[in-house]
Image (cartoon, rainbow, N blue to C red; front, side):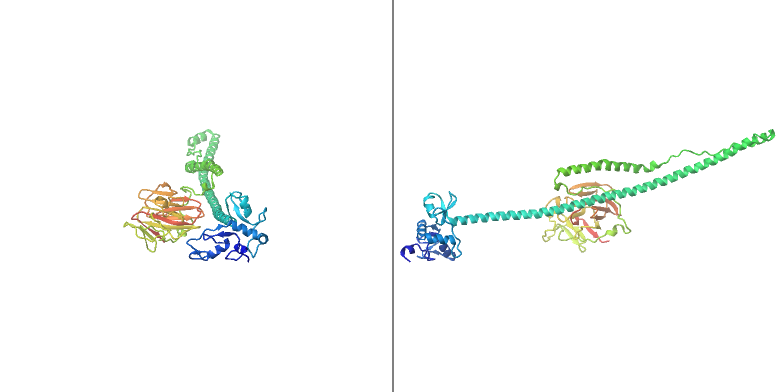
Length: 508
């Protein structure tokens, strides 16, 4: 190798320079060669030729003059090699004007240029090595790719969330439809039964009234017969001779018959005043109020959002609900066995009797292990057992009336302070409040004060999931109140217990 070619040769790869760069000691190497040489160095960086050491990795600067000489000396060979690619190395593109390798990137013209273009056409422009610009753009592409990947992940999560919400909405609408149909069917059934009972009553009253009138009619006909006979006797006496006429006329008496009333006035209206009044109210409800409610709902559906149409009804009474379920066993036919869940119990509550009794201690809260299911600030406990279908009845015995008894979805808040975690104080739960002076039905923070006896030491609860009803019974199985709702999730019995109060789950 002659001296000129040796000056254009990299001391590492022993070949003509490919993108020559100069390090601080003055020696020049191929950019790739010196970079690879330093990659395996864990201590001081040094020059492969003179062994000069550097404290930090030197910045590589392109040796423009050496790059031009290397290109001039190997223009033909380099041009062919770069066009073909050599030994798996990526082929470089050539300048259209000068047929030389594109080694720089002109930032002002935003285009790759060769060494000659860099000297003449882009002399005063800001330029960087083409490989450096490629690395910068690859980093930019990587950041953009990561951003797009993040957007793809977020979009997929939204697709999953929306799909689940659509499914839940379908279930909610189906359950609402089922609940409405059950209510209408139940109402129609009750009306049909009452109609038949009323018709039977009217028929019985008709039979009694007509039978009594017909008896009077028979009596009057008997009177008529007697009078007709008397009249005939009188006519016959008139045809007798004088002596006999006078004798018979003296003894003949005009029949004196008991008076018989001819008016028929049924007292059916007196018996049916209550029925006709109720029917008038029902007719108004169905013909006017229900029609307005349905029309209002249809108008709201056109303007409201789907989130405003949750099938949750407010606290409403159920006057048509029977006092007891059907069957020989009554409420006992649906009795279930419950236990309190210690994982949910607030620290002020002490569970005993195999988790069938919960007592609010007056001595203050006990240390309890933290748990995601526990009510941290609310004097509340849930039962282990949950319900997603069927009819279930249970009873709770209270030491004194200071409690909220109800059911809740599992998603009820448990870590907040304030009333929102209490059963009945949110849209996820329903409860009956008992205290010394009143009974109140609670749902979504709204309540209805109930009339009647407020003192009950034993409360029964009947859940009919498909019918969407939760009915409370007081001592002696007297119905206190019924909630109506299209339930959509698993329901768990829940108790908020006042200080010094104990509640026991009765198994019988």
